Length: 158
Image (cartoon, rainbow, N blue to C red; front, top):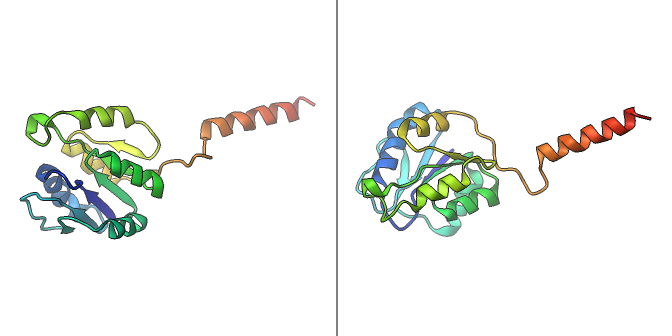
């Protein structure tokens, strides 16, 4: 399942429309928390708001989170080790009062398990790909490779 969320403060109809139009081609069930927007999805199940406990249950069951660039969702994705695609609201389109969400994605882009889409085509392409979850605190591939290389070097030098 793909879980889509716009948060609780502002509508984000452009985002919901993009995901709704793509939903039939994704090959997975899509459930969206759509907030107080006016667009009503036709291709996915949705609710305006979701009780926090129910939201936790949905995140635990989902394979992928697709979200506005709200830090609360980022924290939940990390907590539950779920990959998250962030699609920031844009002030120029009347979706927020400023572009702090653009700054948020710029700061988070490239971190493990976090993916950023700034336009519809990027968003749809990412939703169709298998995405890696965030690493845990104990997972450090580069460190682990270095440790193995050092261990191999020492063992082979004897």
